[in-house]
Image (cartoon, rainbow, N blue to C red; front, top):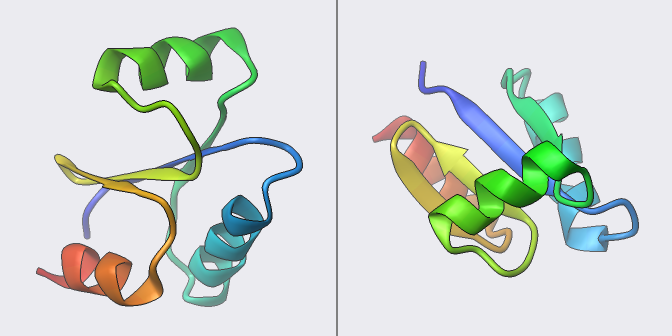
Length: 75
C-alpha cells in the first residue's frame, strides 16, 4: 500500500470530504493541518498554495477528486 498524507485546513469542506472517503475505505493516512507550522512548511516545500493536498506515495494531488485519488492510489 502507498503511504498517504492529507494536508487540510479546519473549515475546508473538500478536506473533510477527502478525510471521510479515506476513513470509509480504511486507508491509513497522516493528517497534517496546513495552519500549523509543520504543515505550512511541508506545503511550502512542495509548492502548494491551497488545500486539500494529498501526497500518495511520491505523487501529489491538489484538490479532491475521488476518481483521480483511486487511480493514483491503485496504480
